Length: 195
Image: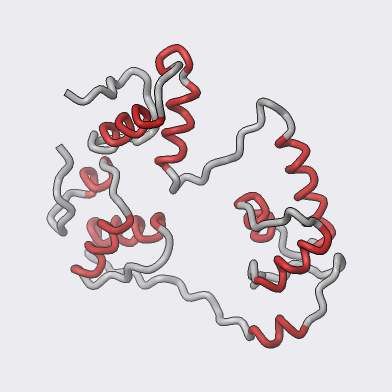
């Protein structure tokens, strides 16, 4: 059974079980740890606290002068800066070039990982990704913090075992799996039927 999340929990028990972000944030508030940031950042802060007793402060990103950014004229030659923000202005610019543009995870990661390239490169990356999506075998990458989404995808990809099963059955399997210790990845050898 899943243990309670208290400061007496062992690091192994903590890492063995699935925790909702709300549970992690509640633990942080109770123990003087910052509850802000992504689920992965919060999990790492709690793991450090359980292992060493140390309370890690979240890293602060420098504030950006929005007026300064808004005044700059955007073009295909605009260079991606180190402090790039996926703002409404940036979205509006890209919609003039790509009418169906939105900040997909792929494009957000492209901005993060390609500092110094231009908005023209972003347009090319968008178009390349759209071409890849046309391939029937294409699967969008799921970031590690989205364990539920990955589990559901893998559940339905297991055709021999789950062919014809409903989304409700997939969710029931997820709810069963996340109560077990260890990985929350879909595993066909685990029986997902709750007794």
